[in-house]
Amino acid sequence: MRCPHCHYKNTKVLDSRPIEEGRSIRRRRECESCQFRFTTFERIEEVPLIVVKKEGTREEFSRDKLMRGLIRACEKRPVALEQIENIAIDIEKELRNGGNSEIQSNDIGEMVMDRLVHVDEVAYVRFASVYRQFKDINVFLDELKDLIRSDKDKQ
Image (cartoon, rainbow, N blue to C red; front, side, top):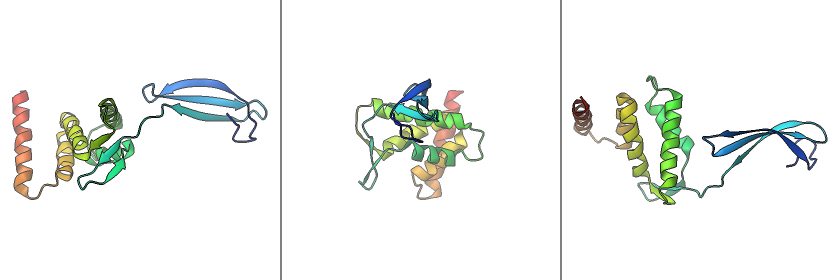
């Protein structure tokens, strides 16, 4: 690894730590010439997941985009950022373990709703209203009735 400061070709590793649930390694390095210290990250090169959108377009899966949608749904709700991150990590892990390189966007939306309903019902309804694009209040009310019914079944 070349030093980013003096470009000397030899550096030594001072410390290595697993991050992202052991899927990456963070290394602290020091240049053997100028003693400049810097951090590098090593991660497994994964096959890109392609998301097929409703209109047929394709784009690469983005955990950041998924996180933004979850954060928006959970805004001003008592949901910890760690819970949101865990949902996103869990969904990505399930998608990658599924063996398909292409995933339908509606499958991802359903996975999010399956998890959000157990975390925060208001966040679930917010996400569902955007994801399902409720056409009128009656469709929205039907979704709320289903949620209430499932709550009663749990008790």
